[in-house]
Structures are given as structure tokens and as C-alpha cells.
Amino acid sequence: MALHHAEAGERLSLQQVTSADSKTAALVKTDKFEAAQLVVRAGTSIHRHAVEGYVILYCVEGSVILETQEDTRLATGDWIYLARGEEHGLRAIEDSSLLLTVLFDG
Image (cartoon, helix red, strand yellow):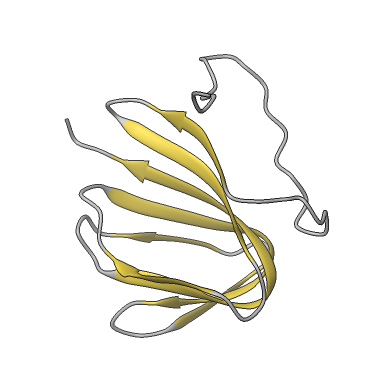
């Protein structure tokens, strides 16, 4: 089954992290940007990696450590962006939901 990505103008609801079945989900993928809801459970990590575009993270709920050259704690309501190609990872302090957007030049 193919993964559903939203069409322009389509309304989506982000899952609350308190829901037992909430999980990471792709929202949109175009040649200019990608968006996803990341669900990271307490004590788990997303390993360090880099992407070609600008990374934008908004912490919808919970608390994580964003691992870059300097670790940064993100809590509910925090927003941050990373430069293209910047290596990063995440470590969840508590069950967390983040809105991830990656912007591409091309």
C-alpha cells in the first residue's frame, strides 16, 4: 500500500502523543519541501544524520534533546531550524511529538 501524502488544501490532524497508536507519519513530500510528524517515545533516539535541505523542528508536545554540535533541549512550543547539511539527532526525554519540515532549494 502506498503512503498517503496530503494534497494542497487537504486538512490533516496531527495525532496526540498520548495516543498509544500514535507514530511517525509523513504528511507531504514535494520537490520543494517535506513535512512529517515525528513521534519519539521517552528513552528512544533518532540517530545522527544530515539532509540536503534546511531542517525546521517545532515541538508540539513533550521534550527532546536535539543533538548537534551543542545539545539543545526542545520542549512544548519550542521552534528551531538547522542549516542545510547540518548533522543532527534526537533523544526523547519524554514521549514527544514534533512537526518536521525540510526545505529544499531545487
